[in-house]
Image (tube, rainbow, N blue to C red; front, side, top):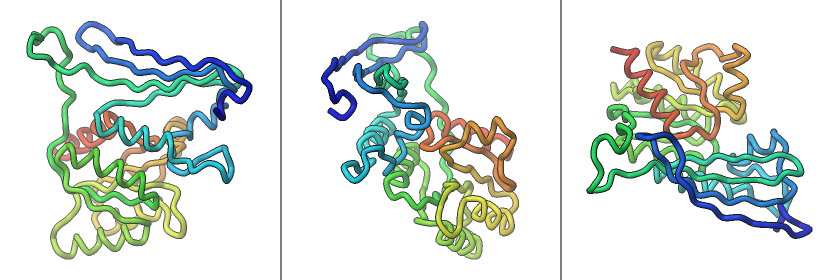
Length: 238
């Protein structure tokens, strides 16, 4: 209703995509409405981000994202001002009983089980990340802010129960992701730090990755990107 205030067309589509051996099923919801500018499109999956003022919670698309993550799917959004919006949920094709090995792509590698610390002040994002990582078998501890994250990390080191990886948001009040990364590396220089930020691609492209950070991922991270980062970190240790 908000996207098509003067009326318009809402289109629901399902289709297959990809190449032989790498098939996906897409579920699309498209409208012919006002569309979004690039800044809004880039941020619309962030929890609590809204353009509706007091009428909006900023949780609608964030909840959609969380559901698709738990189904190992992805969300893609195409939109432009005056050209409408298409939200696409992309699911990998499951192996059926009658499928042969040549009918589908190999399963995406899942990193071995690790003890991971998540640091973020957004409870919805923490839940989404936690659900995705725990479904892959990881042991996840969450800190609801930068200082709490530093305290948990240092306490774990003292107990000799170290975290294998720290995943921290960049933009947090008082103690941000840069300070968390610095504290982690000061305590244990070998612990990898993954930084989450809405400016992920720009930071990497401009060579502005903060010190003490091993990888930067756009927020919210796609499950395949998170798996790839953890696999890369795990491989670099061996």
